Length: 156
Figure 1 (cartoon, helix red, strand yellow):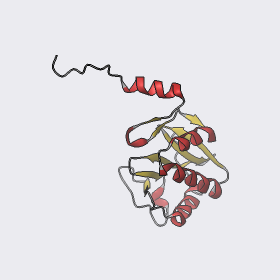
Figure 2 (cartoon, rainbow, N blue to C red):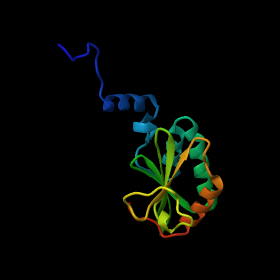
Figure 3 (cartoon, rainbow, N blue to C red):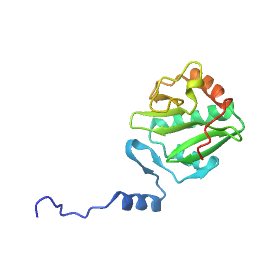
């Protein structure tokens, strides 16, 4: 028959199950790690360990900076993205891997000075897309310091 391949095709779900069984992380579109929903440092560290290429070292540094600036930080993974927050204040930051960059979303970024450059439908959120060899660590530290002191998002 025309249009049919002679080889066996597997679905994304089947490939993902095989990767999970092998202990290897599943990378979604753009290279974002598929990490099960979870609370605490362990799922965030699993996400960081699964980040591809240069993004893994960046993910480690982002996590270190957040812990340095907000030692009381709590962590979680939701929707295949790490979230950082302060107990009783809500979540202030999340990250997500894309093909060419790592997006760091400040959930109340409109309250930061200066604003992070990215914006979209949510009038409060602002984000910082970090490309390879283009991380303004000094500015990022300042944004994290400010964001951790603000009331956060209560989303979950």
